[in-house]
Image (cartoon, rainbow, N blue to C red; front, side):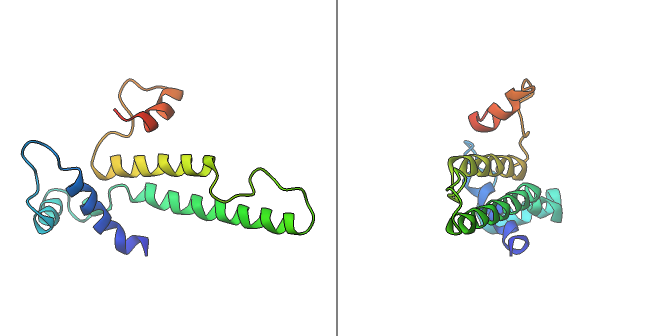
Length: 127
């Protein structure tokens, strides 16, 4: 399903972030035409790798959560990872979303000056 809806999300991202003094796009059809003309079919899937990575991460987190719930129901002590939407999970999902949007819009994933842990902080701070 993600592969079918991602091009629409990509167009939506481009239109809502088009806030320059002179907009690049005059509407949805204009945006679709310009993306296809300038970037080809690949332009509609910029950022798709990050979106699929987020989906895989969420699946793994839900599987872990389900496993921990079953383990707890069978008498084991409740783990701190028991709840499926913990702060850690939400934080990682935010990073995937940030990287997806930057990639879809053709922005660099990290600022040029970011190195080491600075890249991690750059994801959450913006440019």
